[in-house]
Length: 79
Image (cartoon, rainbow, N blue to C red; front, side, top):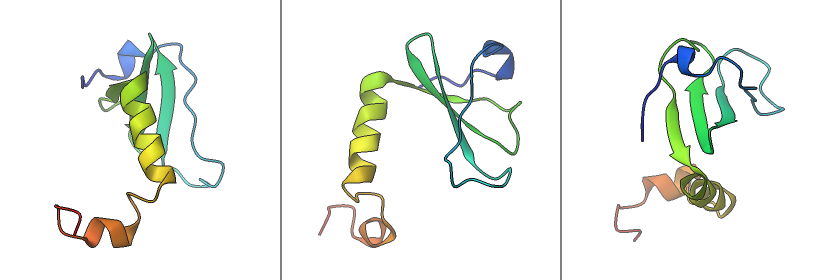
């Protein structure tokens, strides 16, 4: 994972969730075959970069409920 600043992304299209109606959201963009993630409150701060496969693993986990509050409160071993 790298942390490039906004200057690294001069021409990418940042997207937020359709339900995001404030400037307090996560923004996502595709650039150079990587998925960039940043905080919409401060887009000048560095973004997180993930490979497409890393991003897909995260999305699959989110769809499967692995990041729901109840799941996160469980012990790290998953028990």
